[in-house]
Image (cartoon, rainbow, N blue to C red; front, side, top):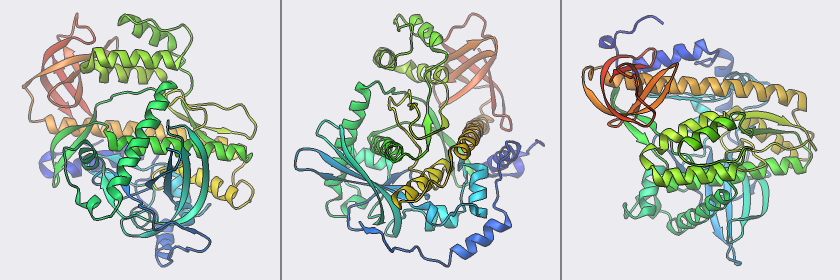
Amino acid sequence: MQPLDPKDQSHREILKRIARRSLIDKGFEPEFNGAVQAEIAAVASYPQNPENLTDLRNLLWCSIDNDDSRDLDQLTVAEELPNGGTKVYVAIADVDSVVKYNTALDAHAHKNTTSIYTPGTVFAMLPERLSTDLTSLNYNEERAAIVVEMSFASDGRLSTYSHSRALVKNHAKLAYDSVAAWLDGTLPKLDAIERVPGLAANLRLQDSIAQKLKALRHTRGALYFETLRANPIFDGATLKDLAADTKNKAHDIIEDFMIAANSATAVFLQSKHFPVLKRVVKTPKDWDRIVELAAEKGYSLPARADVLSLSEFLDSEKLAHPEAFADLSLSVIKLIGPGIYIAEAPGAPTEGHFGLAVDHYSHSTAPNRRYPDIITQRLLKACLAGQKPPYGYTELTALALHCTVKADEAKKIERLLVKSAAALLMENMIGQRFNAIITGASDKGTWVRILELPVEGRVVSGYQGKKVGQKIIVTLLSTNAQRGFIDFEA
């Protein structure tokens, strides 16, 4: 990369240029070609066809997403059952109704496989005319959707599920942080909720069943981590701050409902003898290292991988050492290994998701943002229509590998750009001292996380004799936004 002169560009422009170059280097297409633009021009003149769709517009649908999200993939609503149980509906944008197989739009989505979210810029998998409009479940708009309907017993156990194509309407566009504050009582009133009669009670019902689902998965060994995700804060085009992005009760609603819907979809396709594109996390190959890590903290794990034991260890560490739990979480996540996509043939032995402690899991709930979800949607719609699978096992296997590779590359770009944003923010702080904690020490280098900002950097001198978990004071030596480097000395 050629040097960028920050004096001649805004922070947002600098980060966009770094991101665009990174995308090209990794084989992504940051812009839409002429063929895609021509298809969009044609699509824009055609309204969605509501024929043969179940009319579910009157349900109290709402979306909960980030404050600035415009590509709304799902809506949720809950309903009390007479036996003390709860019915949950998840509506998923019917992206396949517009992005047809083997078109220019489909080819671009297949090429990139995912939207890439970088500070200040989203490189969307689909053009904004679709992802933020025609195929987005926008506020007060009627949209075609795939609806997953799930009934849960009073303890959160799934009893029945079904899938259908329906017409839905988003009655309230909500955001995670404000909904969480409202649920906790720190925000007494939220106008978007107050405007819809009955929505307040429905959201509390959604919160209640989501907490039951979360607790039930935890008893089965689902792993809960705490990672410090830096959220760049802009004032116009200028980067002003980095805020730690943490989970809350509103995140739990969406996370647990989506896990349930993704699992139900995988089970449904398998029950109909369809091939499935699954998202799995395999049993850790580095389990021995996880055992050693636990032993260093005085905890004994079994010699063979056991998710329940690992879950108990993580729970005990979070309780005993909350200030260091984010760093432990990151270490364990790396040792478990990344999630991957696999194709599973009808009747084949099933592979599960180690971290979620579920046997059947697909990606199906974010088709505006992820290509695997479009693939699953096409399989599901064919199944509901009584048609043959649109993908064979061999083709699905190749797609699984391709989507895995591209998802990994996209995460690398997103991580780089957060580091680049941190480097830009701190370029005027060189020489300042910070409180820090050692997060890594090996032959590859010594790393620290400073406590004043959610930023990690390398200690290039004065690190001798320092141990992981040790608190030290470091001085900022240099930053490099293009490479995402932040260097300290102890």
